[in-house]
Image (tube, rainbow, N blue to C red; front, side):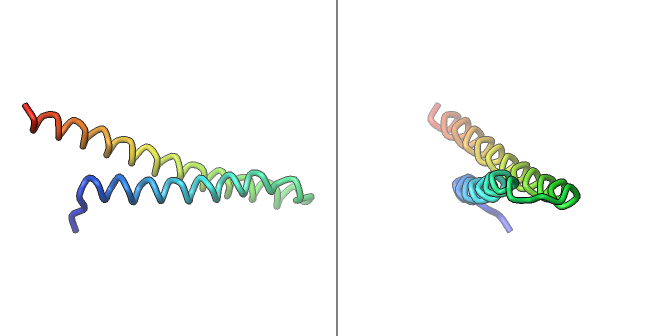
Amino acid sequence: MKLSIQATMTIASIFGALCLAAGIQGLMSLSGITDPVELSDAKGFAWFWTFLGAVGVVTAVLAWWIARGYTSDQEE
């Protein structure tokens, strides 16, 4: 399956935003957890979603950078 560079940017941006939202929501809701084991697990889960969001954002930026370079090469 081939995706266009614009579709890659869009999908990666949406994926990154959703994952970052889940990660930030998870990190913000840690104050209600009293059990240290559960708190550690919740932190790991929240940081995992934050990491996935960062991967999505980096992928979107990289796709945008590639598309920008590709179109400027075509204009010359």
